[in-house]
Each structure stands twice: as C-alpha cells, then as structure tokens.
Image (cartoon, rainbow, N blue to C red; front, side, top):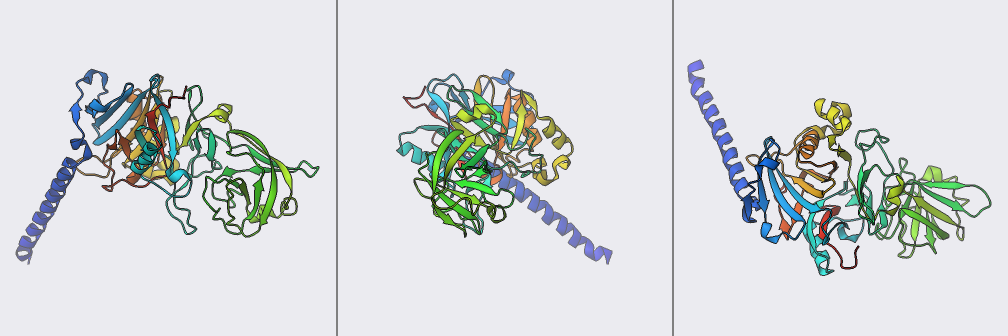
Length: 442
C-alpha cells in the first residue's frame, strides 16, 4: 500500500510546486504592469543621502516637477514600494490643501475624479493622498461618512467626539491625531478637542454640551450639530431634532452665533436647511431638553477648538494615530510594534503588513505617502511600527497615519502613481493634497 500511494504523494508535491511557481510568475508579471513602469521612472544616484533600509530610490516624472515639488519611489529592504510626494515648505508657488469627496460628508469619490473637478474650477492639484477614516456603507444610507476632523478653507466641516475608537486611550496624544495648517503657514499635529456649547435665553444657566459636528448621533455621541455640508438629511433615528436658523454659516474653529429654533422633530432624519443647522439629541438626553427647546426659542451657539491654535486652522485633516513625534517613533507605537499588537488588541491589524497611507513633515518639507501592499512579487506593505521607523530614517519629524488597505492611493502629476491593492482606484472620503498656490494667497 505504501508503494502504491507513493506516486500520488509525489504528484501532489509536484502540483504544489507548480502552483507556487505559478503564483510567483503571476506576481512578477503583475509587478511589471505597475503604473511606475509607465511613468518615466529613473534611478536616483544620490545614495549617500538615503538610509541603509532603502535599496534604491527612483525619480518619477521629473520632467513635470514644478519648483519645490518632487516625486519618488523608495524600495524598502523589507519588501515594500513607498511612494512619496514632497513639497518644500518655502515654495512660493505651492500650498497644502484639503478636498472633501463630492463636496459633502455623505458619499465617496476617487482622487482622480476629485482632481478633475478641481481643475474644472481652475485649481491645479499636483499630488494627493487618501486621508480620513469613515463608514463606507451602512443600513441608514450613510455611505462615505468621515469619522475624523475635516477643516476646509477655515470651515469646520467635521469633528468627532473623542472615543476609544481605535483601541487606544482617547486622552493619549497618540490616538485620533489631526494635521492642520494655520494662515501664517505653521504646521500643527495634535489631538483636537471640540468645545461646543448651546445656551438658551430662558433666564437660567442651562447649557447643552455639543459633542460633535456632522457625526453619528447615538448614546456614545448624544449631541450632534448637522450642517449643510453633511447632506440633505441627518439620517438619524428616534433622535429629537431642532432646526436652528438666523445663524451664521459656516461653522469655524472659533465661533459664536445667535440662533432661533424654527422647527422641532421628535422622530429624527430631519431635513438640513441650506441656511441653517440641525441640532440632534439622543432620546434619553432629549427628555431633559424637549420642554426647553421649543419653536421660537432663541439662544447662542459657541465653538472653541483646543489646542487654541486650531481655532484659526485653515486646512485640517484627521487620521487615527501619530506615528512620529520630534523625529522619534511614538513610545506607544514602539510598545505596540514590539508586542506585535498586543498592547492595543483592538487594532492588531496595525501589526500586520498592509498597504498604508500617511502624511509627514519636517522643518523643510511636507510629505504625502502611499505604501503599496498585498501584492506578491512586488510589495507586501508595512506595519504601523515599520512605517514609524522608516519615516524617522527618512528625516520626517512628525507623521500621522491615514486610512490604508485598498484605499491607499497617491495621485500625482495627472495620474495615479502607485499601485492600489485591488488593482483599481478606490473611492475615498477626502484628499490631502499639494496644489499650486492661488494668486491671492499669501
């Protein structure tokens, strides 16, 4: 019997070997089809400036670089292709900017489509990377809803309540981090807090704390303000909602405005007026306010972001983790990497190699980054800890992690520069980008 089964065993081994060879060949062929083989990559001879963990650095589309802009691909020794768009912070013709998919919270859009839309408005994007995290689809129609902070042209479009969303302690400066730029060009990277209050004119000191702007209203986030940037309706269920008009728009990081209640809805899913906002309160808390907030009630809405410098941020985008601080890997990330995700169990996929996206900066440059992954024979991605170490080796002083996986996309100089994991460009929530500066910008 042993002799009779031996040929079958040998055939099984041969089949396994052939399958493995087939996978390797397909991976190699797929690598040959990557976009960078078609966009004029040349080897960068300046090896003396690169860390030992870089096999090679390729220069991409250098014939299209404007002053102060560069596009590179780094071949990491761990087996990943890292695409980096750089902007000199002193470049007079360039600036950092943010673009919301479809110009509102609900819905997603590819970076390519967003850039075409901007070009139609005579805005010239040079590079963009996918930014914030959010809901792709849910049973209430909230597809494309951002979980993070988004400030665009000074407008406070979205900010969440600080929750233990990622498996890290919310008070930690490591989790729920955002990047922002002030009017004078200062770069900020902080955990940002919404300090919002609503006071009504009833002769008492009653104050309602606002937890979030354009986020999900539930028991974890009981008081939410919805602005026209969210969409046509709030898409809530069973929340008490109050339509506020005669109010100044848009909301900003430092904001005070009077209002009047023009409608009350106890069933949720209110229409958001173009000239007003909707205050949504979770049912249990609403019992204390239903008799205080009635039609024709007047009052004051105030917002003051902290840290205080964020009150004047013009462009801001949120991610989920700070990777590098002052040129060193965050201590929590080091512990996370060394424990292989054990120190933050709910985010263990961060200890596995996947496609990643990020933003970083130092005193001289801004960096938009996409790391390809899940592609055998080409690039397998990085862990969060590997990202932090590699970025610090490149001289990046501060870095934040963006949405990754199949969403990781770096668009640059008219096309997608990297190779997204699914083989096509995925629709995302917002874009962090480098663009040509407006003539009227400082």
